[in-house]
Amino acid sequence: MENTTGTIRLGSENFEFPIIEGTEGEKALDTRTLRAKSGCITFDEGYGNTGSCISDITFINGEKGILRHRGYAIEELAKHSSFLETAMLVIYGSLPQKSCLSAFRKQVRESASIHTGMHSHFDGFPTSAHPMAILSSMLNSLGAYYPKMSSNNREQDLAYFDETAALLISKVRTIAAMTYRMKMGLSFVHPAEKRYTENFLHMMFSEPYSEYDDKHGAGKALDLFLMLHADHEQNCSTSTVRMVASGGANLFASVSAGVCALWGPSHGGANMAVIKMLEEIHAAGDDGSKFIEAAKKGEAKLMGFGHRVYKNYDPRAKILGKSAEGILSSIGMNDPLLDIARKLEQAALEDEYFVSRKLYPNVDFYSGIILKAIGIPVEMFTVMFAIGRMPGWIANWKEIAENPKSRIHRPRQIYSGETQRDYVQLVDR
Picture 1 (tube, rainbow, N blue to C red):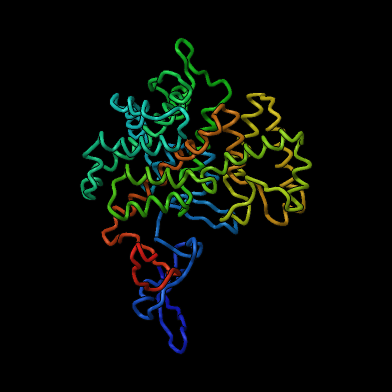
Picture 2: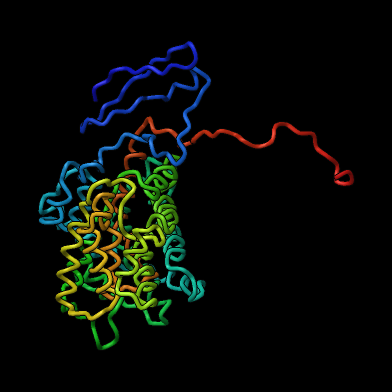
């Protein structure tokens, strides 16, 4: 990285700071010594203009609609790669050789089963419990069954990193499937000798004497969905994983915290909001036309369009949009919500109001449609996001853990409360 300097002027004093430049030309003013030099801190609510780390994993250029993992364009990965191969790329930094990928797939396949001692954990949750609450709890509990991998001793946790990474990527989908079946009052289905997404669908939907039959390419569509969610730079959940990891926490605890951060409707719950919007439009007897006009007048909120980072078309949405078209055609599903979605999509791509404001359909819009078509219940949507994001969380934990200069994350604040007050005895209040 090339280093130059920049100047901050406070009153009559100038303060020099290094300018860090990334490999893609991004520049940042390194203000780590600002408080020591000047007594001031920077204020950036929500960290929207703050670089919290230097990372080698993912590059995003929102203005140009670029997303690359370790230098590889998401379009190329979507065309040629798979979820598990992309997971290895994200975690380890390079595309794996055939033998390494085969070994990783084998390790993931053989790690699918959950210790029988954990089966009873599900009994402790009411059937009304949200799947994300269960997933976070179960991932954290999982570490208790692997004490060597969850020691909170950095050197030891890194020594078992490869096994832990494969284990989490494998078991997160098993826990998800078990959560669904528990809530439905169904018996658990054991993992089978199947590929990653096919095994997940088998554990979700198979019944005694009636194994799930993927006739319409649901497994392939789901693999693409997971791959497109594998990592997305320093979003809310990923930065949460890094913050928890910075305190020395093990990988199980860190990804469990990531699940909690992902849960919110402004992050992982956005695809659920898309389906809710479509249901409300349908319940109002509208085919989408009235809603579009209301949205243009500011009277309705259009969910699944636009993105905080992308000021161009979300590249993942372009890819997933084509996949949605293919799987819906294959299934031949006659769902009025999907017809409404197509109308909204057409308006967003053609109507000058939406085009001029760059309100393109984002990945949440299409992912909600695909998951619904596959048969995934709406309350499981965010769980599916968590399964896909697991490699990115793992990779970011690894960057923190392997950095000998890593510091605990501890943001500053601007205090706006009362100044010093004297204690008043209870009888005098």
